[in-house]
Image (tube, rainbow, N blue to C red):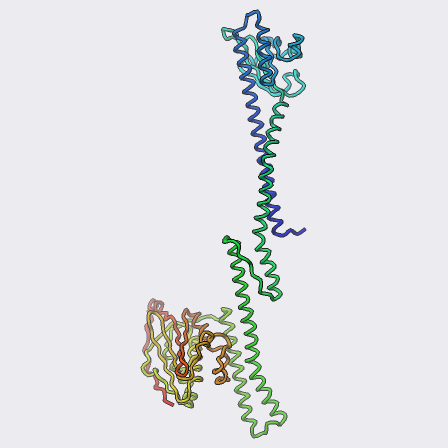
Length: 497
């Protein structure tokens, strides 16, 4: 039978309590038995010594036997023991039992005590739990001490015997009291263990139920945090994980929707144009025009696929960063030159390239080139005709700042927080940029982040948009390797449109 965690914990704890209690009972039983036996021996020995001292004073007196009998009778009743006195040969002649008092003879006086017992008793002290050489039919605790004359010579022995059953009855009484007094704490302990186990396992049970709900797509359940211990921390972590999964699920759905939209639009155009050519709707003299449109859409799909592959590699950590020393200024200049045709068509004025300082960094050249390319491409697309683009590169406190600003309509304040999201496009940019993928700025931010830098955007509607990328220079490492920056030739002067 499979037990859940609550039953396992409760039964295990209960078993530990019961085993501990049983072990305690065994230890206490041994200790109490030994304690009672020692107390009984001390009592019998002390009683025998007292009677022996009294008998030593009465030896030789005519009423010695009568006096010893009276004393033995009184003492035996007070300690619930049988007392008898034997001479040196082992023959009892005084006893405290009722039969001796009534008849002058009893089972004790009619039996002979063995020489070994007498020698041990007369030699100092005899103590045993048994039947005293067959004298008793049941176990007795017997203690024998020497009876000495006035000169101190042993002339006999005084024996005090107490039935072991009396000690057992006392032990049973103590044990019953202990069990009764322990029952209430044990019951309370079981209730406490039950409540504690229920409290400890409740969050785990709720987490299990929530996990099953999440497996079915329901992310609405949360675990109540009722303590500040490890279980409480686990509940907080579970709730945080659930919130993260909700965000990831929302991002996944948004990603699928965006990808579907981005793929559907060019594919629909491509299909429509090709069908028009095949069925003759588009006349032969216009087919080359529409084929160029199809080519542009295919290139747009290719850019989208490449951007998505780059994004997947960056997010999964599969893309390796190959850091080398290169000139960031040179990368910016060559990238701007590659956009010469659209810059001339829109008559864009380029500022800042002529007096740009030579700044070298230690980074992945290909990834940084993608950052620069995406930002320049974005600026060229959204700069108004006859507008301007301003660029600068400078180094401050171990960081390189790449600034690209362009004139134009700008970005609304409500759109700025989401400008680096995947597939996010403002309404204005969506209408102006039909060739974009919506991943360029996301890749810019991701690449800057994995290099230990960052990117910020500022914009004023109707005036300008500005992107600033921060990248570590890697200069400490360059200096350790003895690498010095190299001056390049003069920057090429850009053309005004």
